[in-house]
Length: 194
Image 1 (cartoon, helix red, strand yellow):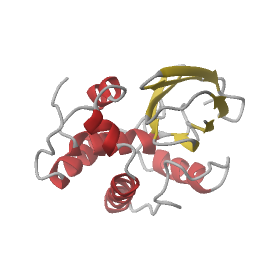
Image 2 (cartoon, rainbow, N blue to C red):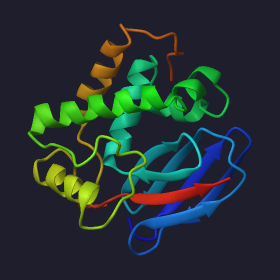
Image 3 (cartoon, helix red, strand yellow):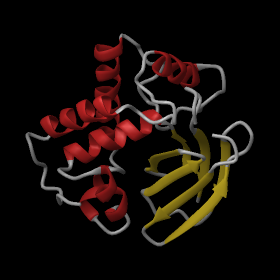
């Protein structure tokens, strides 16, 4: 996402920045995470989160990761993003490295089972994003396979499958509060520092 608007919202503060021509960004602020991240540019809006300071990505895969985690927490992505700065249950889940790794592995398995594509890394939230390699190639393959639509967002059927898997992984409920660009390379990588 070239020249996309990036917005971080944390427990005690927020930060905004813009991606460069390669979709990369860097922002320095007093980190009090986990933080929600929204990237928007043109017709594309993607979401992610920063469990801690360091490298984070915003791609179609992180959108799917949030769908899985929302299902696991018994909520929606919109509610998860809106409530994360104040909801201690959501904060705990989105800062727990085991919970995140298990969710990434589950999303990677669904992608492989549905589209026959093995991701270059199941740690797609925090693995550095390099244009033309690794995750960028994964996103190109997913776009070619029809898993990502023309706006760079995951297709509804894949999102629904991932959400259902998250719900099933929680046994139907985990005590959460219910409620309420155009190429595979769409997304960005950034670095947060404390």
